[in-house]
Image 1 (tube, helix red, strand yellow):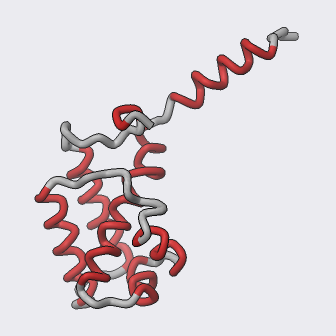
Image 2 (spheres, helix red, strand yellow; image 1 turned 90 degrees about the vertical axis):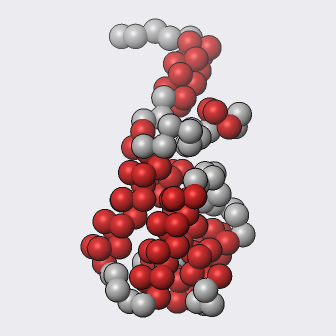
Length: 128
């Protein structure tokens, strides 16, 4: 039987919570930021929130939260990534891309961001 005092348990839990894996970082920060940027681009091009939700396969409340910066606002994209997001938005409007191809394109943008050594993806480097 292990015997830990409350302080030791609390300390171990704090260390565990700080160890966010790169995959968790992508799920919690990167993908929502990419989706938010795509949603913003589509809205700029005159697409309704309801249509944006359909195109991206997300709920209308998710689109609303992206647009109001309640989620998906953690990452500043460099220009080539913003351009890739813009091209993706145009392809969605033209209906040149759907389903699995959309996932591949979002993954491609995610990889571009992961290759960007200047990008601050971690909440640690943001002081949060």
